Image (cartoon, rainbow, N blue to C red; front, top):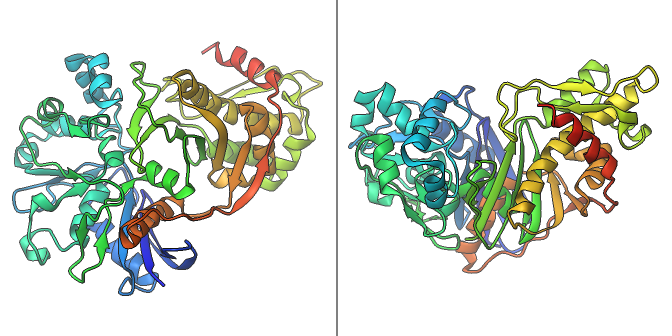
Length: 467
């Protein structure tokens, strides 16, 4: 039996799965925590990676490994391979002004044409410009730039500072894939090449960036001879782990919400709603992000003094449209649409419809209608949507599943909960271990096929139009 390892180095933790390369069967797994915060010393990720590997029983018996990781994080290295400063993560918003500065300098249309996206504070390019503007001495030291998963793969292969590694700071060994590079803001996913003009403007000088390696190709090897695949950004790895193909749209209900699809064609949205990323399957991954997802249900459950199971039962006891009650769930402002200072609102309340059941349903309808705006943006951009793969913790709710069908109007597939980022990385590892793509079956929790109920979307659109 050939074993492979997949890693998810996320914001909160590091997860490692060991799977049978042929069947995908889980053999063992482990995890370790990451520090909290919006900037983190990457050394913590390396420690957590080794702890998670140990918790999974080690990788001495695996043929290949691949690392999926949080996108956008800025890891800057000096000429000796040392990390210059803590990495700024995707959720660090201090570079919002630099995002505006990039758009002002290059124009949104130019940036979209070159990179597929309008930069926001999440992107690496904005963080580099922030470094140049606010820490010029550190910016001047930068010899190479990596993303979290790039840096971990490099270190796992034995590279790094002279006093911390076996192979030294060989920047020529830095590798990444199209999916993670496409979130930097200085990479063209259509040509698979870096945009040197954007990178040099952001940092102030040229720097080494990881070379692009395709999925299915050996990128590196550990000192013990274990093959290392190219890895991927987290959303792309999740899509790969789910086996998403053209026509599948993944709706992920986490702390924030994401709507993304594997597509054979790229997108170019100058409004900034759609980020034109690349996929882990060598295609494209147009993505829309919302700020308000599962936390909406957490908040309303707390308000109603109900568990999540009770919230689901309450919602299903109400009629579609919640008797005219509409929740626009902009509790944390919103990114799609771009309303960072907006607040949530409840409208349509009367003495007759002011019930716990209607409020519970309105919360779920509002959360899903917000995500449906992202889905419609993808469809309007030409992305095919034949079904929705509903994932994330909130996807287990029967009410969320049922109402998703009523809002999205396409068949809903709910896979069993799993570590899909790590699984996607494991599939990459299986490809390099076996020399061919792995054909793994995804366990399904539920399938929903219901007709779209226009009332829900129509009354939500009226309420949201007031913002």
